[in-house]
Length: 31
Length: 159
Image: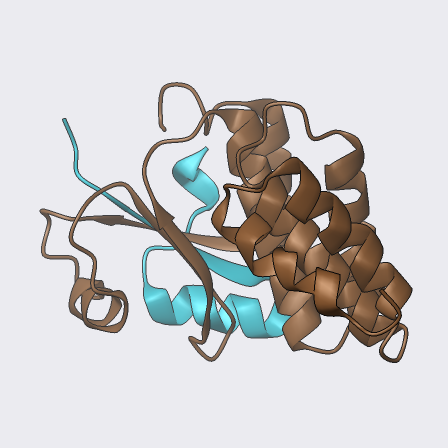
């Protein structure tokens, strides 16, 4: 499902400004 | 999260419908991690940070959640943003259904807390709305942090 996720914070915030949606940042450590 | 919560259809629908999502590997030196970490002081994972398009943080938490609790946290964040924006009816339209189907959701006390705030502010200092929500909160969750906050409702006007 991560195909639709943004790669950069700036892109997510720009999309947030256009859609009115909140930005969700998921910080993870693999393994 | 990747094994259980994110693959859940209801989680995917909530994220896809109401959020712009960014995934950052804590160990990967992602170009944006410095900004995220400095703003939110990320020290553990998984950490979830919800913010508006200007980067103003609305809500965050650390730790894994199963789908039902995760969706509730996301919806509570939407309600908090609506309250911050003065959209009190919208906030109640989110918190109300959450409270009607609350079984097993850890953030219910906080939902009740904000449900009362949205009712109070949306109704032009509607003490009855605040008393309904906070009275239930203080009585049902007396040892919860938000239950304790709400205990002041006993001293509210008209009590």
